[in-house]
Image (cartoon, rainbow, N blue to C red; front, side, top):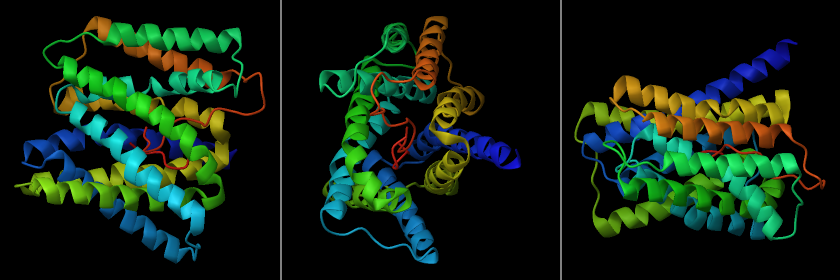
Length: 307
C-alpha cells in the first residue's frame, strides 16, 4: 500500500513539474532569451544531469542502430516538436498550449487505426470524438491567444503523436533512462546548431537564468525521473490518468503568475480533451498492441516523456 501511495505521489509530482514548463519558458523569454538558446540550455543541461545519473547507476550507453534511432528521435523529432511548442508559447497562453498538446493521445489512436495496428472500440472512438470537439472549442483566438499560437499548439500535438509511435521501437531496447538521456542530448545539439546560426540570445537577468534552471532541472530532470519511478509502482493506466495534472497545473500557474486566463469556451474545450485522455486510458484496446502511454518530453508514455 505504501509503495502504491508513493507511486501516486511521484507521478503527481511529475505532472506538476511538467506543468511548470510554460511558466519557466515565458519568464525566460521575458528576460531576453530566444527559443533556440532556451531549448539548447534546457536539453543540454538536463541531458548532462541524466548522464551523471547513468554513470552513478553504471548503466551502459546504447550502441549501433539503437543509438542512431535515439539521435534521430532527439535531433529531428524532439527538435520539431519542441520548436512548435515553445514558439506557440510566444503567441498563446501556457495553459492553452498545454491543453492543445494533450490532443496527442487521440491522434495516436487515430494513427494506429490508419496504419492497421489497432481497431478502436466504440468507447475509444467516443474519446477521439471528445478530443476533436474539445479542440474545436479550444481554438478560440482571444487576447491571450493568436491564431499562430493555436496552430502551432495543434502542430506540436501532431508531431508528438508521430514521435510517440516512432519512439516505441527504439526506447524498449535502450531502456527509459538511457533513451531519455540520448534524446535530450541529441535535441540539445540540434538546438545548439540553430542557436549558432541565429546567434545566441541568453537571459539578461538573474530571474531569467533561474527560469532556465527550473526548466532544465524541475520540468525536465525531476519530471522524467519521478515519472518513471511512479510508473514502476502504479502502472501505465494510473500513470496516464494522473498525467492530466500537467495541463491543469499549467493553467493554474499561468493564472497565478502570468495573468493568463482561458475563456469559458476554451475551458470547456480543455475539459473535453482531458476527459478524452481519461477515457482512452481506462478503455482496453481491442488488440493486444497498446498505444504508448502519454506524457514525456514529454511531454507531454514513451520513455522520453517531456516536452
